[in-house]
Length: 326
Image 1 (tube, rainbow, N blue to C red):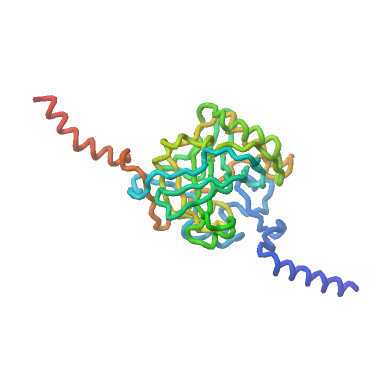
Image 2: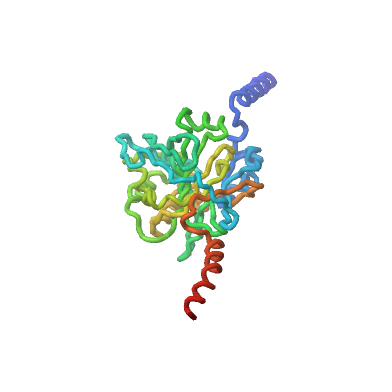
């Protein structure tokens, strides 16, 4: 009887492996649960960003995200004109789903605002947005943005995830090399942003993993800087910043940051990675990845990069001095 039970149990395990492509990654006892470094004390068996490739080999690819953008090395691209934001100013009638998925705070949109132009070869529809942030210790806030510019990070980073308008969902979009377009916005600690009040108030309703709530929808552009301040951005080809780290993402990283107060930013760390007595969710970002020969492009020739400013000053200074002493 025991032998029969073992045979049947083994058949069940094999069947599970065949049906579920994520098996055994869903079973934390196999050491295949991915996490952030800030979770290691509570979950020592989870795989932090240094070992995500053991969860999914794509996380060791050559086009991984995020990156550190070195401004002296970016390439001006005249095709990177201002993006077209379609229905970003529309408040839908259906509520947004906000959830704590154990890694971030994610908001699933009930409408599909679109982007186009800006060097994109097609239109993309927005499906969700989420955030990454750092940690506050006493009076200091340690930044948690994923991307950085010349090594400088900001407090948080907002990602608005878009997929090609001709696909059904994110899984379908991964089948195309240009299937996903993510808009990345830095979040800087400054003055209070009242447009975020609704979103932040909902955090109290999703205190632990796998909890969700429904929030009143907002015009998506109300969460962003004014459109006229979004002409300067960086563009590169990369990946999702969490496993499966799929390398089908067109990244647009904007220079102009969103502003939130320290109190607003800190409120994101009141939710938990797991249950209500688990670690507070903080430092949920992936470290910068190697460029591996990729180019990073820049949209604006109207405002010069620092090296160009120095060159211009060197050219103009002799003329100014000559004028003064005539």
